[in-house]
Image 1 (cartoon, rainbow, N blue to C red):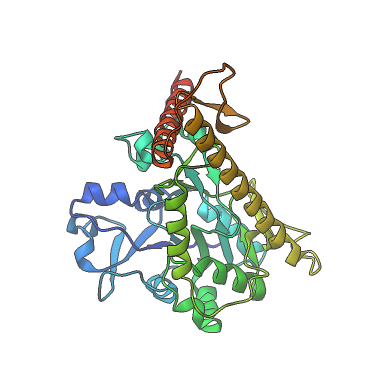
Image 2 (image 1 turned 90 degrees about the horizontal axis):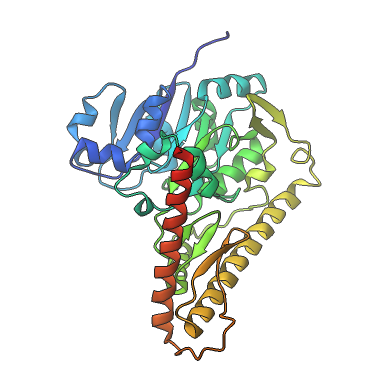
Length: 364
């Protein structure tokens, strides 16, 4: 059986006054307790309900003010053999102990997993992610989701001693606030550079409801507002660290190991020094092409609805596309604002209809 390991989820949560609300908006807590992990809450004491702190398995690591703790603070908050750091608004599941045993046999001390973005919770209201992730409909929902880029991480698994070494070797990662731009790049770059990293995406399921107002999720990203998207991109760019790092290895495609079907297998392509730099470039190209397709669909739908407000979106090869009318009708041209509003209303209605249809089919 081998030695037993202790695990902590180290997480910073969104504040709430009632315990029920706190657990609903921070589903990672329920996921951790279900997986048998103790939870270290790195929060200001005023942000966590006393009822949660008095529950078994929860403890508070207090910070001096309501803020995002640094990566080093998250690592130092743990007291177990292995640490899970995850965003509080995700649900994760997997055989964590089995994965750790397999990692140890390969002398791997770090793992990371991408998340699956689901359609926004407004499509399921009043259901929470805790209920969705433990329902019979989870498989159908995952089929509607979008797996995030290999450069974006929402689930980190680390041996505590190795993570302290990582922080001491790379202070710029240690001082970075968790959940901000730059943490993923640095973690991926430095672990791929100095250690062995394992891609856990196929063994750890990480679910996250979309909450970005400028897009929806349905088998990919459905852009709803160009102006809101530009504001989001600008805000993210403003949070980037001034100190630039080499990002040739800042991608899960470069991870030397992959966890799947209960085993940890080496990736031959990622272990080639010649191929490694190209793996990240290929992922970057894939993401850019996907973004361009998203923009093309948005502009096409906006154009069609400006000409024919009655046009309804249809699923075409997994994308919602509005079709030009075949009849020679004279459509009243709409202003940009009217076209945007009409398009958003139609797309949201179609997504909600498809979500409900899939859920109903799964339950029959």
